[in-house]
Image 1 (cartoon, rainbow, N blue to C red):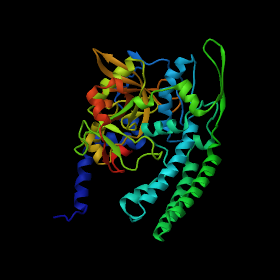
Image 2: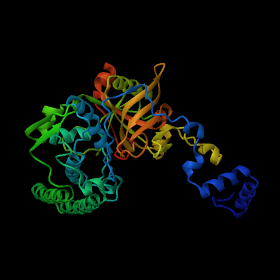
Image 3: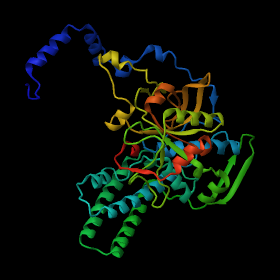
Image 4: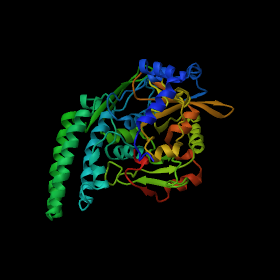
Length: 443
């Protein structure tokens, strides 16, 4: 019985075995002096990189850049609705203002957080739930339904009307200041509740906090416009002007995207989340009384069928995936066979997709768009992905995802409901089961 310790005898035995292992020596020499991605890359897979697809959504616009912020969900969602918008108005290129929605997301999340603090004030501050709320009170990441809630309440504006600020491009400073204040205000509200303060007192205190939050966010991002004129020149070099718009009338009159007809499908192959059920994540959201975050859990082939139908119909698809796995940023390639870790380390990597979710090895880490697919005999071999990391990598900011990578690391798509069967639509609309806020579906 070794009592769970690492013994010197066992260490010497392992070292002796390794000293005779030529493949170990070669791997050690390579990795200690080189980059892991370069050493482990499968040349056969690298040689197959080809940015040609049988079906591509048009028009294809310039790739956007979220810079040093976690606004991928805002960028990819706005990129989705800008494609039909650009086609409608014959624009060579166009961006909606990501900073405009970023402003109101920070404001609404502040309110959402404070309301959650009040509703959990009877729970211990070091308990799992309150600790979870305090861990990252105003993060950048979000979900499709949170995007919908923002647009329905605040509308939308062109980027030329409300461009990025320094804090929009690099959100670390605003997140630091807001997180500090939110934790401070959380203590203040919990202390008042402990002293049996009246609801009126708590409401007045919270109103003061929200006023201060608005000031802080405005200092970092600027004042969002209430009215504006939109002027543009189309592909035919004709000038147009739309006067006296508000963000909400601009969306309703000029964008008019069917937000309320979009459906989010998730692939979560775990015992705790059976297929064919609708799910929501407790305490995940931004706008109080806004649209709840909702997913229908389906198998990957269902997601693929819906995504292919949308792309064939010239409609991009909003996606959520674990982008860092088997990924090369410079090449712009997501390929489950791109790196030969098994042979390099002489060990198996056996966690399946559900196991990776349950044991913290996978998360819905990044939002992008499908804007193309390559079909061979009706089956997908690879997917064209529009990212929001600028034009430097991949094919001017457009990436490749192999179909095998889709199987392993794709978790979420959002498509129009018309690409789903009536049965799937009904299952999506059913009362969702609630999963805890720390569930992987909440990442």
